[in-house]
Length: 399
Image (cartoon, rainbow, N blue to C red; front, side):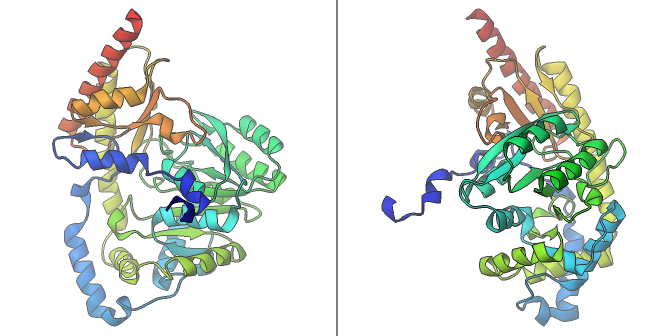
């Protein structure tokens, strides 16, 4: 059978996160693995009212095929929300997609041929790596510090790779590190994109989940030549199960996405789009997001406090101002995949950091999610991880 498959099948493998999540479905497992929102914050009762209202108001249209571009009232609402963040757009700039993941896949379809260059942060979002890998590109990684992608390193990468197709960045509370790109670097990123004639894909699923510090305008807000393609989603601020996200780009760019989306799924779920629109119409989305922020801030603080108390010296970690994740770097020689095996035996899970480097390496890192577990389980789970890290460090010292 092997000879019947496309060559791209050989370069694809199952998502490491999804494979770990199969284990974490067991209720006894304390999971810091997935980027899952807290399910107890989902607006279940409100969504019951929303579903009834959508079906009552125009049920036949809600259950019918729709345009590829998306439900117009929702696109108008999205444009208004983006304008508040500094992105000027209209309906012609907005395409509704089936979650951010479809935006990543469509970007690969629109821009990538085999062997093309994708420039990305190091580390970067694992699901983006997997989406782009389908189209068999080469990845050029750019180092980060606490202010995000380093612009001197980015310029060097652009000089060496003059035909790079696009720069991929998650500038707000980056997945996996939780870091946020500074405003000066956002401006410089656009300047370099203009100078080296390259597109930028700005992925911003977490930007509204800020619970410390001042908001920073999106990279797209500084776009002067229409090079920045912006994507976001309602998955982290409403519910991921509805799978509604969007892309914002220049009309001539967006039309390419529309053509490929038509061949992929025709359009995003009509009912789901109308549910999101009706929720925004009937309820206070900002108040709902503020409720989420408060809970996640408590959980982030508790995870950081427990790490300070329970992890040994020599372990470093990020302290994000928002989002869902923080990033841990273990002492050299401590392999996070080996740590995970021991942690799973103790009913605790996380994602080893090596998975977030498209060209491999940095196996002494890991990502922890703080949004999905209760406060009690955060303390217990981090304490267990800390104990096992200490044991590995002691074993290494004896060698």
